[in-house]
Length: 221
Length: 221
DNA sequence: AGGTACGGTACACAACCCGTACAGCATCCT
DNA sequence: AGGATGCTGTACGGGTTGTGTACCGTACCT
Image (cartoon, rainbow over all chains, first blue to last red; front, side, top):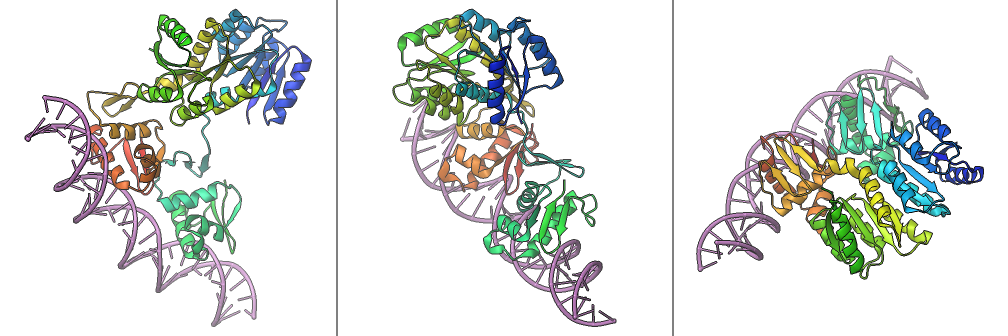
């Protein structure tokens, strides 16, 4: 969940942004002045800062520089001043974008999406721990190195994508082997055994790839 | 040196930007319409695209999507339209910033600096090490000198652009040869062998261009 | 205690996949 | 015209993977 720190001295704008951003499933933190913003950012490092420039206690560019001293968090500046020099000053201080008031909420949201999209490709997806192994479904890698055949991968993926959830034999067979294999539970047993041999510490007593007798299998994180 | 591709159908703006950007030590490439922009970007991959939306031949969002199909190069959109919906459309299509005309040159330059500063880490590794070779995807060079054919380049690029990640055979075939070649794995084997002969120290035991049996290939840094 | 159902394991063989070699063909340059 | 280069397409050997069957242990039921 993306955490946004909103900094503005106008309680009305603050409230409006908080409500709207929360409605968009953002985790919103707020501050009303520069020092509060720096403290809040340090206490709960945000994924994005929306910063109004007209703060009572600090110059906007100083707030930006204060943040940039220790974080590369994206910063979107809001400002009532449309002069070019202000924009240049804020952007060169380290801001990522500069929005002039009055602005449309849709535009701000789009700019938030654009900036976070650029800043967060590092967010690795779905790296799953299984015993002493780390499994990256995106890269198709396992560390320490462990090779799986395509069928083994498919089966493992089905289980890992729903941690803790029971997956029926029928479902696994359909997804991995095809709809017409819905009853060939031999294959399942076979390949579950292979996965356990490769991934479980003690294959005879699996701790993560569990059997639900009569039902199916389950990945236990 | 940062290469900027400027796309605008107004010769006057094009000229003004070219002169001013060159004066700032940017390497400037220009295009007057959407198709020209896509071709220019493919021929000389830029570090930044400045894109005017009012092009005669293509919709602006389509140009953005056309670029985003294969590159994450930063895109700054110029537009005479200040409506929120236009901004949202462009930003969500993949643009990084949206500047409304008329704009100050200083502001545009500041936004260029802001966007390139943010994108730098991504562009920095355009030079990739593979064994004893250094591969520069930007200007298509390998040191020590090693020549690759166009097809070999395309294939290598697909792999190098996602270090450590598995790329499926299907994806490689579609990207390099075309969608209708999705099953012609012979070509893949053939060209992977050629790349290994040219780039791997011991082609029989590749260390960087790895096969994932049944799945695809992977570039291991 | 014996039978039955279910899951785990072992193993053989066929099918598939990979790497490689090689020939034909189009294109470009000299 | 001739040669070099790069792309397309086929063939083949060796290794790996998937498929199918058989067998064993355990839990539960009668």
